[in-house]
Length: 357
Length: 164
Image 1 (cartoon, rainbow over the protein chains, first blue to last red):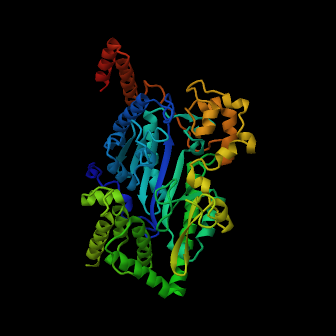
Image 2 (image 1 turned 90 degrees about the horizontal axis):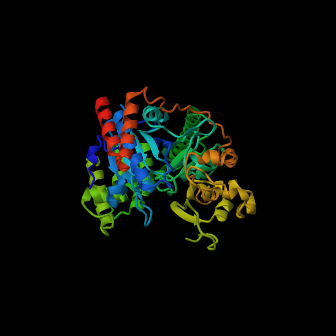
Image 3 (image 1 turned 120 degrees about the vertical axis):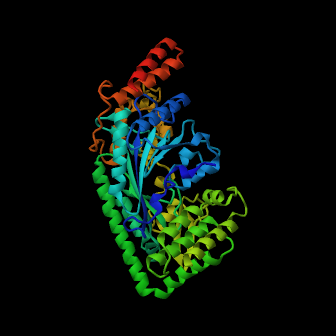
């Protein structure tokens, strides 16, 4: 069992809902893809190369100011349940954690974390640096990340091309190597059936959307990750500005949709919200997907001030701790335990009871 | 999973709709989703490459090997064909080895092949930054030990001690 207390805030400060627009935007995450000169990219690299890369990154981190206290998680030496835990916490990708069927983490696969900054080592690129912040906070997330990137870049030779910029294993990431994504909750747009238009509009302005866990994941509980599609030909600031502008607009649409719902469908929305709350509060079994969908309804209710005294932080915590690996770890079960839905319902009841006083 | 609508093609998108007060998730194929007015972005969701495999070549000509497919990167040995199949380049030098093809591809993917963001300055003269120099020496030491060149290793270890 890994000791997450090694992370001062459990790598979850982004969950505290303290950030701007915290009831609609859960978190902001930015990542930079970097590779080291002199080594083949991850897929073609030999195991010895991967281990050498990890050692170099660890040494550079130790010599830097930002990452000198970083905790290293060796995914290649961890149990599956623990790897899944880090993935559920949005700290590592499915690929790095080797969670796909019949896959294992690559030798040398590791995560370094210090505060809001993390570095995945030996992912698709040698380094994937990320910065996470609570709420809608692109500038702050980038400031953390830029500082860490600059320091590591002075200590490690990154692969860089005068025309193509930072070189990445997949050309879709070349140039800045920057992908910024904002995790946003849009039940208002879904209920008013405006979501299709909004999502369609995104692709026309060079943005894309994904599900809760990023690339390749499904949209559940009306949570969407909006991010930039291209990484080359625009500066880091331009990419962040553009995404920021569009997200602000989407947040505005969502707020309008919620106003309309509250005004014109008061009873229907109230009924939905309270039914979701009632089920969470009293159900005896809950699957993860059902929990997500119910939490979406309750979150909408909290945002509309329909449910007094229910904090967004509590809902964010439920979102994380009802995931299979978290719940299993918390309650001392295995992730495959058939009783997990019952355990989940008990856990949710306990938290909501405590909140209701 | 088959498409809920036509029940013929593979479903690639899950469309959640609210009908009669309840949420319904439809599993749709690309075509049926489009017919329902949803921009699927299926390729984007399914693969990090988006539509770039198709962007690489023009139509059917793409499936046939072209003379350029055999183009090989001298540094890692990867070929242009490897890249077309896996969507991943072998190493940083591949960008020079396949430069014409990649410039074209990058323009189609990003609308430009010219990086205008932050200019990276590689760690310069190793002598300049003692921290960088230390890391260099440690790397040399590792290689020396790997190659069982213990005389060199001992010397490097002494130099590292001095710096530390």
